Amino acid sequence: MQCREFNEISEAYLSDELLVETNIQVFRHLENCPKCREQFAAKRELRNKVRAAVKGTPEFQINPAFATRLSANLKQTALRESGWQKFLFAPKLLIPVMASLLIFAALGFVLFSSVNKTTEITQTSKSLNQGLIEISQKAAGSHEDCALKKKQMWEKMAERDYAEKAIYTEKVAKPLQAKFSENIEMLHAHDEGKEFTHVILRHGTQIVSVFFRKSEATPEVYNTADASIICEKEKGFQVASFKYKDQAIFVVSEMTEAENLNVARTLSDSFAA
Amino acid sequence: MVGIKWLETKEERWRDFEAEAMPLAPDLYRVALWLARNQTEAEDLVQETFFQAMKSFHRYEMGTNCRAWLTTIMYNLNSKRLQKLGRMKIVDDPEEKLAETIPFEPQLPQTLTDEEVIEALKNVPENFRQVVVLSDVEGFSYKEIAGILDVPMGTVMSRLSRGRKVLRMELADYARNHGFGDTENKIAAG
Image (tube, rainbow over all chains, first blue to last red; front, side):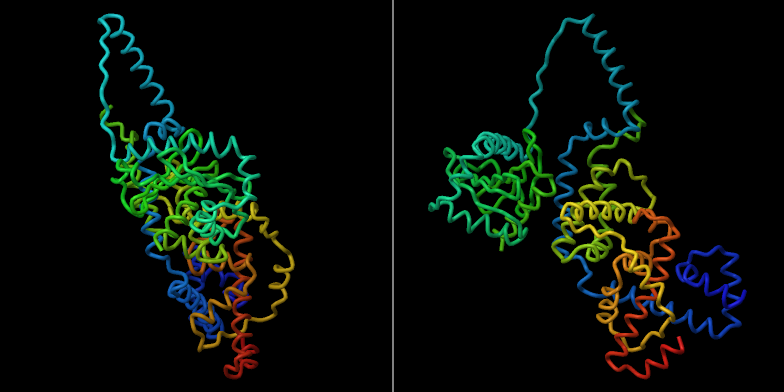
């Protein structure tokens, strides 16, 4: 191998992308050519310096608190998702699942034809967060009926100033504006029956509702762990909920799950600070 | 239904995902920081990547290269994010020409700190830097990088070669500006 040939493949050699036979030719050339050996050593040294610099600099290390929170949020989402829904939609499982369903349907038909029908209703036990999920459904309904259907009214009222709006501008809108540096505007805040305080925001083109579940109406959500955010889809809306002290807080919108979760995370972090 | 292993419960699926994907969060974050403008954006990108990966995990084959799979998802999400924000960069020929005009390979100054090396890497044009980071820092193969960036392998090879040269130039400029040794001679010797 000549120097010119080695120069043509030296980058690939550095990246360990050559065939074994070519590697052997390179070894032989480097053994006998001090100039190429020196130049290649410099290239390898630079590669090693870059790798060590990036991997060793604190700026490039993941924040452990973020990693823990990410893992907890993913786990909650993963374990809450309906398993049978997921594998029904996995293409490789579609045929076996459909076949199983057909067999069960046939067996059911035979049993139904031959035996007097008896219906047994099984009471399902409530999961720890069942209470929270029920309130999430109410929050999603309120978002639809109140925030979205009366959107134009809230936008007109946004120009007026009133006491409750000022408090929630401070507590809710400002942390979100700081985080997203986008057009986030506080539209309205009002009490909704004895259960919720409903805060309505405009986030770009989206309407976002934040519900504060009043403390005296919240005993059923106390089982939820602190610092964890639960995401779910209710009535077609994304609902992210978390606990802060003795209140349960819900963020409801038509944004994506990740975007809605980001809003909830910002509020959760802001309250915890 | 006994013996049908593909009927995985959500607990089993999470256990697999946790074992295969979650240990790679630090690697993903390191790459994300080169794509984003700051820590918050990088964390958002990593989070979005993991949520997307979890949704598509049934398409991932256990035991294959999970890091390359996650990095590909992250690059795709980043492209969409930049398009949405109107910050998508068109691959510009001037950058390619810039590297073509570098006539020599300057010798590496000996006394560089990590910060100086990273600063020089930040000054390398983005198209080249992406490949240098994926190859030289993260250790991905040409084939994997071609898949992540969705470009031909020949493009990966040429961008890597040029990116390394530009990086050496940046470091040599730095050394010259800070008066390290007789850099004129060093450069000529390179």
